[in-house]
Image 1 (cartoon, one colour):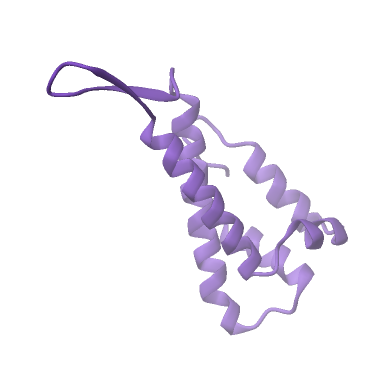
Image 2 (cartoon, rainbow, N blue to C red):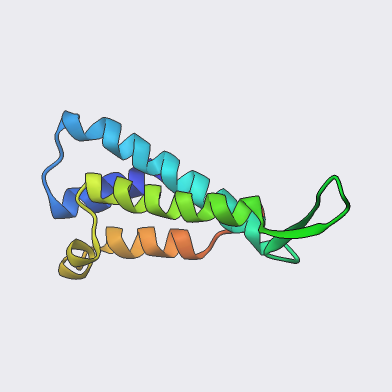
Length: 114
């Protein structure tokens, strides 16, 4: 994943050692995001039922769904940190961009790409 992010970010702005930490953070965010996508695909419901002490039912959003929402925002921010936004992706026609998009799109049943 790090290799793909490095390749794509290199298309949009020159690589410097200062970007290394951001690229590693972006790869970590992508990994977390892929794991959550895998977990969500296994859910039967998007909510959980909690019982109060009095026995009353309360419907809450599934914790994985909440975590996915946070992860999506973190991933978007980490992509922006390395210069990857929708604008830069559309402006860049490199194979690295397509490789990254394909890698994200073909998450296997274990939640991992390649």
